[in-house]
Image 1 (cartoon, protein in one colour):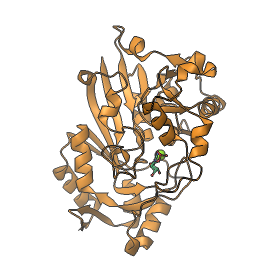
Image 2: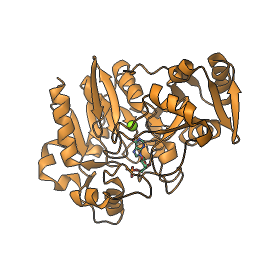
Image 3: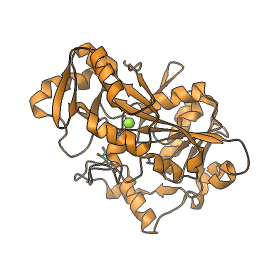
Length: 329
Ligand code: IMP
Ligand code: MG
C-alpha cells in the first residue's frame, strides 16, 4: 500500500495536471484520488494529441485507472456529468472508472447564485466557498443524497482499506498560496491544498511515499488582490502572453510575478516535498530574463544554468525536475 501526492506550491496553475498525467502513464497506480476543491480548478490535459479541460474528474481516467473524487472535494453534479460526457466524446472509455465518495458534499444552485456578485476575493464563482461553509455548518447535501449519482458512489474505507494492495495517486487542486490555513487569508480558497488535505481523504500518513510539489519558474495568481508589480507590467505582459496565463476555468488573465523563493521554501517544508517540478522554464528562456525574489528583494541571474544551480543549492528537496511547457499552442 502506498500513496504518492501531487500538489501545487504556489497559487494554482502550476501545471499539476501535466505531472499527474505523466505519473499515471509511467507508474502503476490502482487509484487516482482528487483530494480537495471543486470545479474552481481547471486542469488542461493533452492526451494523445487531444486537449481536455477537466474540473472535477482526476487524470487517472485517461489511463483507465479508477478515478475518485474524494470527500475533501465539493462537486457540482451538472458539471460532473458534463465533464463525463466530454471525456466520452473525446473517445475515452470512462465506464466503471469514475467515482465520487458517497460523503462528498455537493455544490447546489443556491451556492452558485450566492457567488454571482462576489468581488471581495475574486473567486471563480463556482459556489465552492458556500458549499464548504454549509458542510461545516452541517447544512450540506452529500453525494449519496443525490439520486443521479447513485451509480458513481464509492465508499472510501471499503475501497482503500480492504487488504487490497492499493497504490494511490493523490491529486491536489489549487496550491499552497491559496490554502485556507497557509495562504494569504482572506485571499484563499476554502479547502486544504496541503499534503494534510490528501490524508483527510482516508490516506494513512504511513502510506505516503513521494510528495511531488509543482511550481513554475515565475508565479501567477488570479483573484482580487494586487499581485503583479506595476513597474514591470511590460515584462509580465510578455510572460502572460508567452506563458498563455489565462484561467482554464474563467478565462481571466492571471497576474504574474517573479518566483518567491522564501514562499517556495515554506511550501516545500510544510508539505514535506520530496520531488520538485519547476515548470515553464521555456517562458523565461524565450524572454531571456532570469530572476527571483528573496527576502523581498529581486535577485538577477545571467543564465538559465545559473538560476538552476542556485535553486538546486537552496531548495531542500531530494530531486528537482526543470521542465518546459509542452502544451504551448
Ligand atoms: P474559490 O476557490 O472559487 O473560492 O476562489 C478563491 C481564490 O482562489 C480566488 O482567488 C480564485 O481565483 C482562486 N482559485 C481557485 N481555484 C483556482 C485554480 O484552480 N487556479 C487558480 N486560482 C484558483
Ligand atoms: Mg488551473
